[in-house]
Length: 98
Image (cartoon, rainbow, N blue to C red; front, side, top):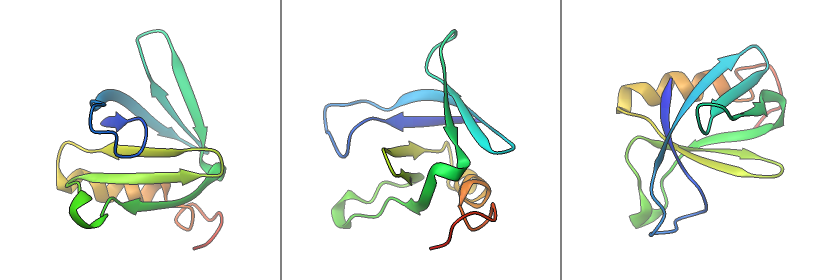
């Protein structure tokens, strides 16, 4: 599905960029452009949380934490967040625990 990605943590000048994500088996693939795809193995995900940082509460956004990188993503609507979080949460996949 379509999500918006923001690079960096809370950089005000950075814009949300539309990416197309696919969860298939044990990996998430996302397109940065028509020809370039990136892969995030589900086993590398340590946690998934809604973005709530005091006044930095971003509606419809969640963050994926891996050992190497954090991804801040935003769905089109609040109803689209829960399926994504449930599908990629480590404990839902039978991997890891919180």
